[in-house]
Length: 299
Image (cartoon, rainbow, N blue to C red; front, side):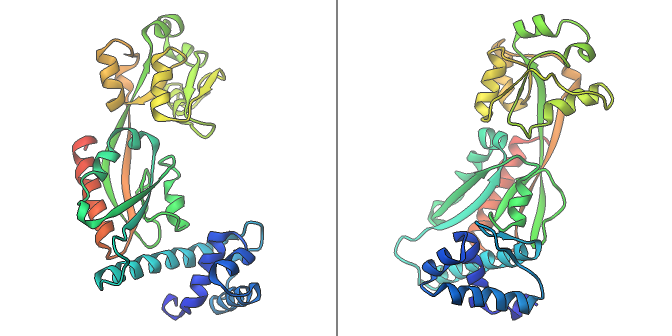
């Protein structure tokens, strides 16, 4: 049982994961590498599972992720308790780590953070990650909360629906006239396309839906790994792309973009997942995020 895990062993495991090696963890904890190794082995014996893969840097097993997540939650609760007891250092702030996708970060998410009461002295540590992969950071205990596309709660987390982010298939008007003049089923597979990075399958999946499961976007593609840069690349005529409605709207009004398939917008549902902790800071962040999402996203 988690309640039976010795806290010194749990904290030692977390130090090894954060520092990357047993020697570095020993230096951080001011103990010998032998003591670190003995504590980790004792924890593995107690749980009956291998928790770490002894690589460089070390990697957690699936069981190790559970214990590391518990260790991070424990550290968070300890900091909150110290703050409530007045034991924190003068002016010490509360750090909240959040995984968020680039498009949310570029549109509505930062506005949510401005709603968190300043008297809570919250510092935000944002990790940019695709919404399909942010849940993995939660599962590994690397963040306390995440904007994700998954409605399935990560163990130890709660999940709430935020709304739907609408994406529009858009292009520069001249690009549309040059590359997309014919039927989209024929032209989209050849027209240059913008993608976020090598993992970005959004444009390909749009084409596959159009072709009923066949093919994908053109092999002529430009990788632009920022949300703002992605939109500008499309507006500049380098290729077509799926752009969030919030970013596309002013460019459509200005005539810099055209929606070449207005009946084929794509809605991506977003969810807020967070640790199940009674943390005032985390609760305040969640409230601000939910409120802003209700205004910015589609229901």
